[in-house]
Amino acid sequence: MSTANSHLINSGDSESVWMIILLTDSPGSYSDYYTQQAIANNITVYTIGHGSDVAPLCSSP
Image 1 (cartoon, rainbow, N blue to C red):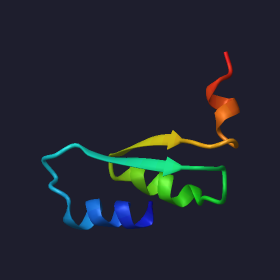
Image 2 (spheres, rainbow, N blue to C red; image 1 turned 45 degrees about the horizontal axis):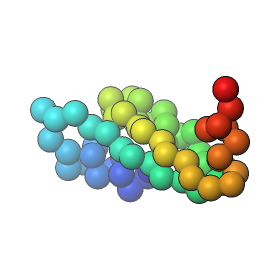
Image 3 (cartoon, rainbow, N blue to C red; image 1 turned 180 degrees about the horizontal axis):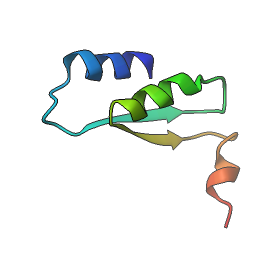
Image 4 (spheres, helix red, strand yellow; image 1 turned 90 degrees about the horizontal axis):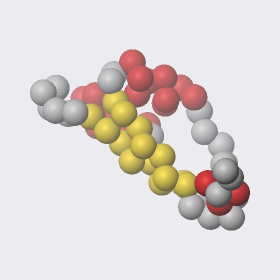
């Protein structure tokens, strides 16, 4: 997230829609700072989780 945010903020075309696709295989550790940075810079983040730790969340009714 840090690298993606920095790239868009410093080099992105301000006329374009900014988005990040975040792939994850488990909860792990993550700093909310990067989410807040994305929000502050109008960056949309799509998260895709895959693996045994995230599967129960996806299959809940």
